[in-house]
Image (cartoon, rainbow, N blue to C red; front, side, top):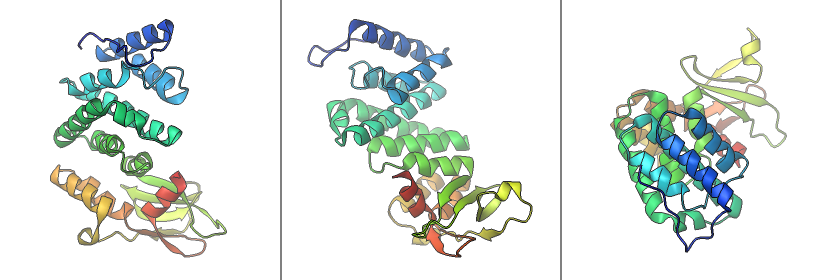
Length: 251
């Protein structure tokens, strides 16, 4: 990757932090050190011991995303998208996006390029999540895509009294809603989901469905019709929007 430089117009972290950040990014960029990616997640995202606004971070991640290694690009895009959303939420501004607008554009372009050529289902979903996070349109993309990848959502019944915790299953085990302990009980009541007709999808649902279908991921497209459909609570029999509850439980 290109040699990393700092800009005198941006406040610098102390030298020790800058040196550690530079070392981690360079180790990650070489593609042979998964621990470096783990450490970047820990120090940039989880505990904030390194500054996400440091002038090394987003330019370096954009360089990795632009390279020709799909796995490394996916790692860089996933981290960059998560960091931007976290900054949006933490500071309630889009200052980081504005400050590094050229790098965000490069990252988004790379995410869309890799999305169109990725065959693995879960890798594809992660790239779609990265696209949404990099665009900054919604703040619960992680939770939406998590359910598609893991084929289930853990939700609360929308009843004001919170009558039940629910599992909504979307995938190989069929498509149903059940009480929280369904996996531990042979007689747990399972109620079928109600998918949305693809022709009735609008907004984000329409866009994600069309992307998945155009990119050759028909299984993901089908799962999305369920995620944007409805489930029924086994306790109170209330029918509710699955994606609506995903958003509510993520806020």
